[in-house]
Image 1 (cartoon, rainbow, N blue to C red):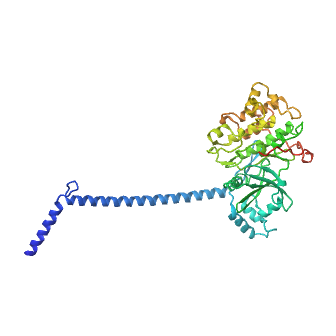
Image 2: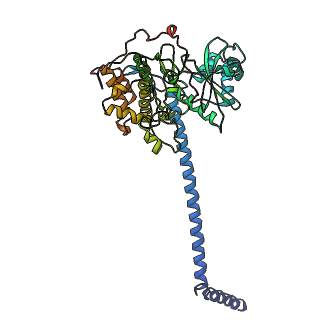
Image 3: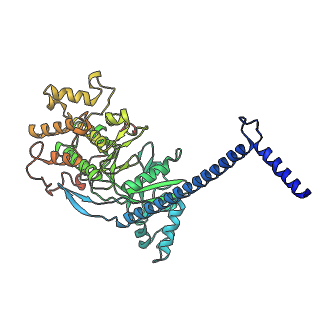
Amino acid sequence: MAVSGNSSDESQSLAYTLTAKTPFLGLKLYLVIGICLVCLISTSILIFLCLRSNRRSERREIRMKYNSGMLISKLKESDREEDCEIGGFEREKKAIVNAELGREMRSEIESEASSGSTTTSSSAVSADGLNAIGWGRWYGLKDLEIATRGFADENVIGEGGYGIVYRGILQDGSVVAVKNLHNNRGEAEKEFKVEVEAIGKVRHKNLVGLIGYCAEGDKRLLVYEYVDNGNLEQWLHGDVGPISPLTWDIRMRIAVGTAKGLAYLHEGLEPKVVHRDVKSSNILLDGRWNAKVSDFGLAKLLAPEKSYVTTRVMGTFGYVSPEYANTGMLNERSDVYSFGILLMEIITGRNPVDYSRPPREMNLVDWFKGMVASRRGEEVLDPLIQGQPSPRALKRVLLVCLRCIDLNANKRPKMGQIVHMLEADEFPFRNEPHKTKETAPLCSHSTVTHKIPVLSKWR
C-alpha cells in the first residue's frame, strides 16, 4: 500500500509540473516542450531537403558538363575543310585550329616525332609530328636566332606595338619573316594564341601564311612566309619619286586582292574572323603586286550572325569604325568600314588623318565626302598616278568607298559583295557573277626595279 501511494504521488507531481505555467508567454510546460519538438523536427526536415537539393544540382551540373564535353569533342572530330565558291573566290569550311602552348606543346610534338622517322636535326620535327599539329611546324629558338643572325638590326623589316619582324633564312635556304612578340604584361602569349587560332590553318593567296612558331620559356615567335615587296603604306606614302609605280590598274588589283582576303575571313571560315586592324601597313605586296593581308594580332573569332562588345577598343586611329569606337560593338562591318578608308587611301594617296594639311583636309573621310558631293570626284585622285581611269571605273570605286563608310553599319555591303562591285563592269552588280580572268601579271617579279620606299618612321 505504501508503494502504490508513492507512485500516485509521483504521477501527480509530474502532472502538476507539466501543467504548470512557464515564463514563455505564460504557456504551460508541456506546450513549450511540444513546440520545441516541432521546431526541431521541422529544422531537421529542412536541412535534409537542402542537402538533397544541393546533391541533385551538383549531379545536374556534372551531367551538363559531361554532355557539353561530349558535344565539343564530337564537333572537333567532325571538323573538316571544304572547298566551294563565293562568287569568284575560294571558300573553305572550318579552318581554325586550337594550338597547344609552351613546353607542353613542344613535348607533345617531339613525342609524336620520336615515334616516326628520325629528324634531320635536333630542332627539326618529323612529318608525323607536323601532322599531329595540323598547320605548321615548331622551330627551336636557336634555329630562329641563326636564321636572323641573332635578331640583328639589319634584318629588321617591320616593327609595331606587338613585336619586331625580322627577315630570316632557314637552314634549307627558304626565306621567312620571323615575328618576335613583345612580352609586355603577357601580351606575347595573348597575341600568340590569337594569331594561331585565327590563321594557323588558313591558306589563301591574299592572306599571309603562318608557317610555324616557337614557344620556349617566355619567348613567343611566329614564322610567316616572306613577302618581298614591302607594304602598301610604303608605296603610297614613301618617297617614290614624281611618278608612283602604282598605276590605277595596280591599285585596283591591290584593292580587289585585299577585299578577297577579308571576304574569306568573314564568309569562308567558321567561326568567322574579324581582323580589327585593316590598314595600309598591314597589306603586304609581292613582286607581282598581289596583296596579302597580314598582322592578325588583334583579330577576333566570332560565331555566325554574332557581335562582340568590348570596353577596350583596339585598332588604328583613322581606320576604326564609329560604332566600334563609340559603343565597343564589333562585327565584320567594322572591317568593312576600315576597308572603305583603305580604298580611299589607295585612290587618293592620302593618310586617313594628316595634320600637315589645311583644316578642311585633315580628315580624309570628311574631305572625300565633300569632294564627291560637290561633283569634284576626279580631283580626289592621287596626283602621282600615271594615267587616268575611265569615268565609269572612277565612279564605281567612289561609290564603293561611300557605301563602305556608311554611318549605318547595317547598310554597308559585305566583303563578298564588294569584290563583285570592284570587279563588275557596271555598278553595283552584273547580271551574272564576274570571274577574274587569269592574265599576265601587271608587273612581274623580274620587272620590279623600284627600291621599296622607306617611311620616316614605322607606325
